Image (tube, rainbow, N blue to C red; front, top):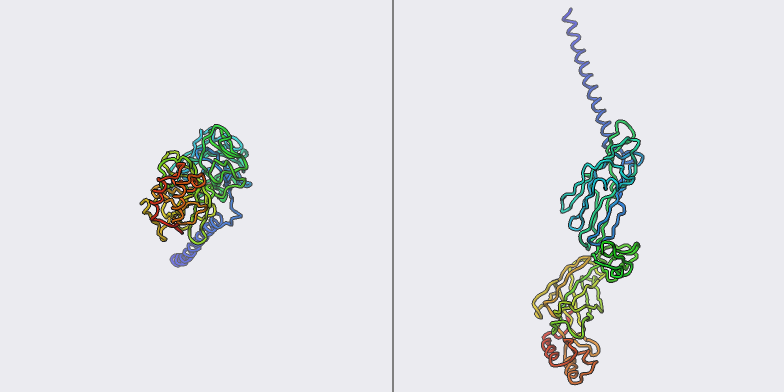
Length: 438
């Protein structure tokens, strides 16, 4: 009988064990479902989010200037107890300025909201960037914690940039901790909304000064002895000679494509007596309609007394796309086409239709000093694009007449007279008899 009862209980035991295992599995599955719902697939509306906002989000700066970046934190109805924020920046143009711990804690609003600075570290990051990491903790009772606060970090711009630079929160490496008001979430990690956690930096060239007058219209000389625009004015063309010329915020710090030119004129080897400045006609030609003609550009004789002319020219209608050629027409010269930013070869230099140079939105340096502009197309009274017998005859006539008008037209080396030297110059130019075209 005992054996019979034992045999009957064995199947029941197996059934109970299977039921127990099933219950354990169901409980485990339920727990996993709860965890997934709780932490993985909750709707965005249900998440506890802390928002990070950089204020201001745009800075207009000059090279060498230090600035403060305020960072606003908001956790809605929740409270913030600690932050671990990482901010990326380009070290070629921007550097982080460390602060004493007391200074950093006092920079928050309200002051000394954070009680301890655990980490302040600037270091190299990937892709040529640097990053600064700041960890601040508010060791205080929950009743003293806040949902909204501000603190500031200091940076310095190192040099001017022709493109906009940025400070950007590295969200994946950042952390904000606080409380949601429940015991089990007194050390809660918030999701971060970083959609406004970036600041654009427009960095123009610095200009040293001692008085406001040196900074041009709407500019002031700061205590650091550099020019700064008054509130509501902007130096968008990066040129302090005309001060802060715009009342509209800059779309770029360069104001368009600029060519910084260095030109050589045939027959001039030092600063000419009668022409410290000369006017040129320039055409920057890209493909299709991407071209701009400037009828009169004034260039200045170099202070080095080397016979070169220099200046920076703004082409504000040019899109910096594709390749370009530059056509240069002097006041008594044959037009020359340039396809290189630093051409060589002297008067033998030629530019083919397949060649060209690229430009950026900003300053582009063109050293054309090794290829002189040939003289000969004299204004009698207007230039016609050719060096021919009319030009030679006008010069010969002027050697005899010596009137002010004809000297102004045919004095090719700008020494104040038309003579045999000018005649030699025009004869040496006869190999090129007409203007280059695009």
